[in-house]
Length: 120
Image (cartoon, rainbow, N blue to C red; front, side, top):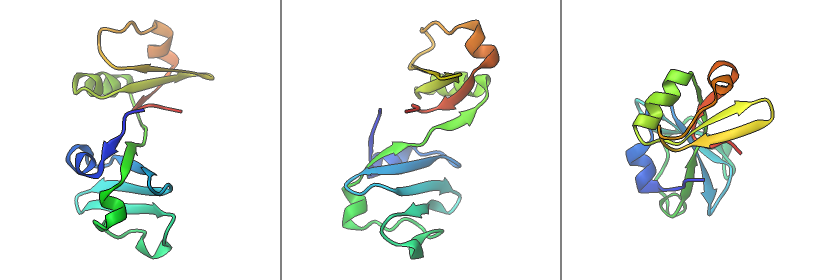
């Protein structure tokens, strides 16, 4: 699972993408909008939901992971071209791909559910 510092997250999170803090506090989820990073879930306080992410000491020390975003197969290919990790879920099986050099089964293309990011 690829992780990001808060600074890296601010630089790389695209509009509509969400991310979850995994350290030092879990259960804080933010989403990038045209207004910046907006809190979607906050384990520390429900008052902050819908508000911009404050750069508190906890947030500045945060370690984040991007939440998987469901896309079409074509969207997954575009994400791979941009250096993103993509995952395919087919039944109970999950495969992650890091480059266009990896072999993808035809069944995954046709029947699989594709995501930008790693699924757990």
